[in-house]
Image 1 (spheres, rainbow, N blue to C red):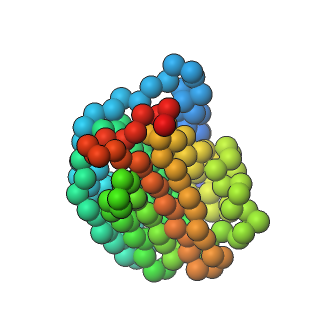
Image 2: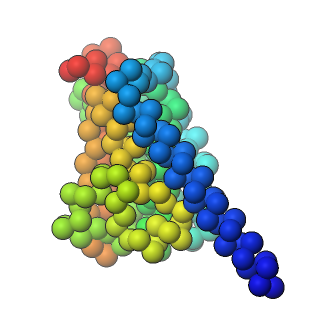
Length: 197
């Protein structure tokens, strides 16, 4: 029985280490001056729908409602990197929510595509909100450890969004929930502005 328990601990710690190493590799690549996104014209709504289906079973395990409200839009972006952004945001929301729901929306507003991920989770106190995008920072150390977080997820998300010429913004109230809002700029043809803009 003790051997089984030790093996379980070793397996969990090895999985956490793998997550940290993978996230460090992503961060180190993004820090390179020659790092480029692999953009292609794709449907952001289809990507969000796919991600929604992937995360649905995880939400059900915690008896959380996973809700979506997505407008169709097709433009130039890196599908692989943006998928990672959406997955990480929804996963974080689920990990830090014990009851209620996680909702993802995507709407075209004037010359921007706006994605929000909102939850009814533990929230983040004001004094900590400015720190959450810093590397290795964790709002709740114990919860992050239990869920296998590396403390790099939000830093990676911010980096990817920034490289797309977009912004990410947090609104949160302690014990009531959080909402992350990603804004991707679009030009009249539906393509993101160049990164220089």
